[in-house]
Image 1 (tube, rainbow, N blue to C red):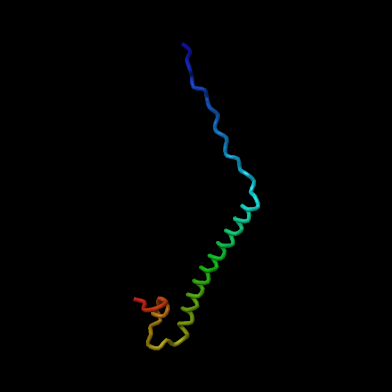
Image 2 (image 1 turned 180 degrees about the vertical axis):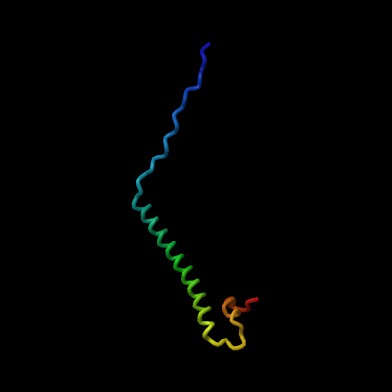
Length: 79
């Protein structure tokens, strides 16, 4: 009887990396642009919040406490 020793198998070849096509490059640029716009919106939000804090120290608010102005929800009460 012949011994059937397992033959060593070669590792599978890695998937070939296809060259990037023009459409894939366009998609990447579009995604980068959308990411930049999202980041700009975040910066505008943070900057406007800081501006409200700075302005609220100089502007008289009457009987309204300063923290009520900076934490008010749009469209109604803040509680």
